[in-house]
Length: 360
Ligand SMILES: *Cc1c(COP(=O)(O)O)cnc(C)c1O
Image (cartoon, rainbow, N blue to C red; front, top):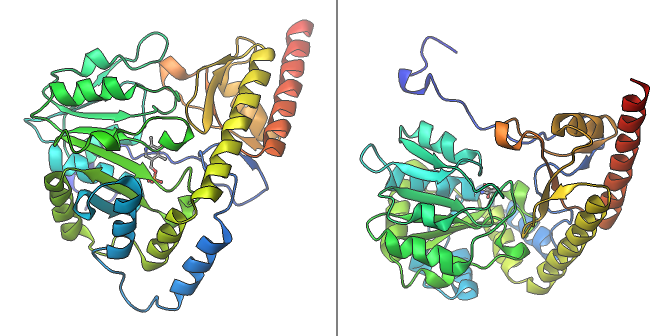
């Protein structure tokens, strides 16, 4: 740290992104990307737009936003386009939280929430998940705080029903309720259909997971016109060109490729069910997942050991050190071939552990 770094950030612990190794060919099951590249038309749209890279992008993101509005059945004024949904989440902490209005979210959830709270000097409270790792919606009724809930939740993969989300929004009319739907396309139910009824509801989605555009950085926020106007104020006060023109073109085209993405999502869900069943057969505990990942543990190998041994064998998964979940690994669902290879490595590790324990 330099002597120039502002005191207000001295205690800040930044978010730790999943490993993005460039050194060797790993089977990459650690950051919940899609195993499938974007469709050819999306790649073409991105390439073509590159010829106009000398010109700023459209700060209103008009064409993309209009398409989002059409696809999601809302007005363009209810949509904000952002540089990955992390950006709109940060804007929400800036816009809707302060000393008098703290943030509240589950103890086990997306790691960025506590980072954004710290970054913005926002006090926050965490509420423990239930014993079975589900969110109890009753914990979020009348909370007098800005609510952040990933639904389905990460890294557990479990979800609240739309009815439960509605209860939370309804019981907190004076506070914003942010529903982070990064994984909703893999089997969740979107709260976008509630935004007209609840002016305090903000729904965020990303193109990084189901739409194969993690590297393009594209997300959206959908809510009431007034909430979205607040977010635009912050966007125009930080970076009006937050979404670059290649990404806007690719995102627009992605919204035209419904069938491609439906097939991709269906394949991921099939591979998820296949992998979950296989892991259960091997004695794993597998949380019920509505996402493109599984959160799993086994009494036979410690979470950290499994992560390390898989890495030695060329498979990357994600391990978290928080006490409650340190026995788990989060495994992104890839292609069938990737999952078959992953399961084979898991079997090898289980056999090795058994031998080591046997000889001690
Ligand atoms: C991946 C993810 C995001 C953010 O994704 P972006 O790449 O910034 O769009 C947000 N919330 C959760 C829970 C995620 O897993």
